[in-house]
Image (cartoon, rainbow, N blue to C red; front, side, top):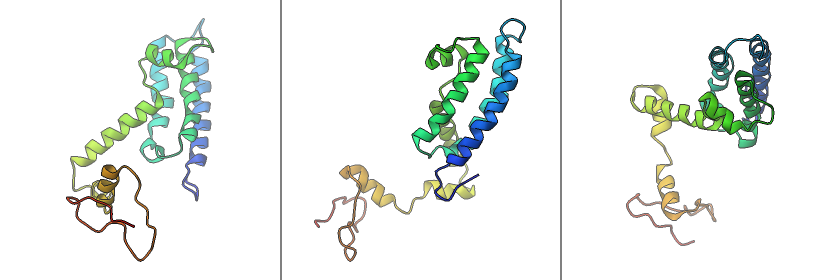
Length: 171
């Protein structure tokens, strides 16, 4: 579910609605007086909600931080249900008690795992797209100079040398 602007907002809304429906099942099972034990409910959370949040996070992880934060209340609400915590309990302490990382850390971990897996198999079609960059020289220049290179005149390139002699041309 993509949009023309590739902001991932429709996908994130759809994902939030889908996880909210799974929260209803969790709410029934996690009743404090007669519900399942904490470990069983956490297992249900991991299989019903976290799996949906994880799937495709490498693709939609490049969305705006504000858009990605709309998924945080889903995880927080699910952890509150699993632990039987009050609504005023801080989300960071819920993550610690449930032994679950916050979503931004989990997304980063999954992205790093994917990159490591991709780097170990150069025959994968996406390997060249991710690791062999056409603009490597500009990234090296940007890292050394510390600012994004910009063209001032279209007839003169900003930089046309090898990476060993990194120095921007005077404009």
